[in-house]
Image (cartoon, rainbow, N blue to C red; front, side, top):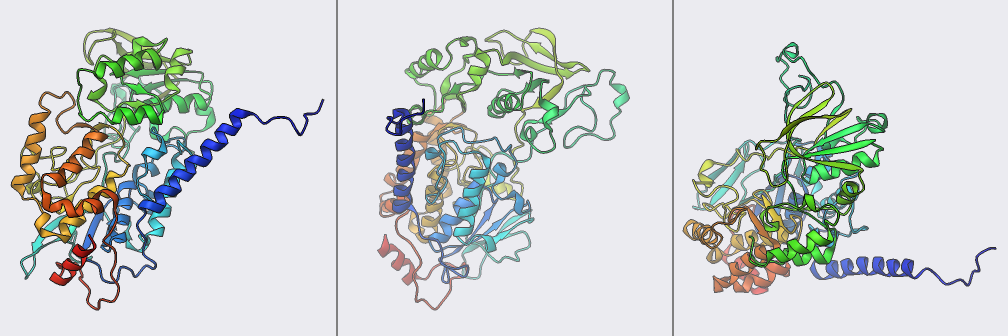
Length: 543
């Protein structure tokens, strides 16, 4: 019998449709309220308040540059990779890689418009590229231009400027370092790996010295779904994933999606895995103290009974607020139904038949005594993460002893010079997101300090702030500034104003991005030199 055209629609589908409409509507409201106007043409701004160098064309770099130019500052972006590297780490991950957090918590710029709650790589790269073009950053980006030096020079007027590389781009009033925390794929070489596998492999090593070498495919997790890895490579094969972090969890999912026969994860340490739930994740990030607190066990108990039911052996013994958790809904289910076998242990070497590991009991630490076992494998996936980008192009004097990353002013400013901002480049661990509204807030703090010399902190003040945080968070397992929650970061930014009442007039601009735009009709151009008194007063009147 054919279905009647008057049959009632599925109420669940109706609810989903309403939810999708509301999801998009909320984004349009955010855009209408917070989006700063982009330049109308590539030659704007014609009369910038200053010039800023942005090092890195990843998500943070593009967002920072877009914020600068929308508030009437000229920018130049330096990127070591070719244009295919636009988007930073997102241009190097699998196409199946996506956000761990709901995309409402990953609005790296107010103009972003997501189509999905958990977009994958291509949608994320699409939004980065759209913002890059809309804010006229394409002609301002220097691809294949690695930064080798950033030098401070004094001008005739007594003010200081920064020169990047050979100084061909002219002087800059400030530098924003957005190299991030993930560089090229990190390869760990184990005994039993062929000499020609992985970047940096030693071509002079003698393979004949190894009598038991793994001859199957060895793949870095970032290449697991690349064109170089055919379907036949994974399908129906025994896959061993080395690593238990976010890339390891994702590698297990990708291998299963590609038809792997069996998947085994070798985990050095147990990681907290929290659900992809915007309400739970937001409340978790609202904990205002970036450390374990007396009531933290409530969150951990809740996760143990809700998220870890049936696999409670995987619950970490470390605290939830001691490291960045993995956000995933599927992995524990794969372990629960036997699709993935979880082995707690330390990889020792590769053999012709698989991976030899020191298998340990729950509660033991990496490297402690266990049982040596060989885990059969046809394919080995190294979920060993990415190398941390270096910042050797910056002078060591910017980071005196005791004040290196992440122990910086507001965790992102050099304590020796406020004009060097390192948004998301000193990040280590947190509960929150590295791609949220704080990119704009930190950028606008820098712009404020450029506009208002009275708001600028001294090196002594910046070090005092670091020392105060270290005192208040002494004993924190994740380190005083090595781990924080998003609520804690917000408190830092609010206190930036409250501790200095003379900064309060900038509060609305810094926190919401309202005010400070181009003023047409001026005939002179600043060309990176300090603003004249009348221009400063003009900007202050807007605030």
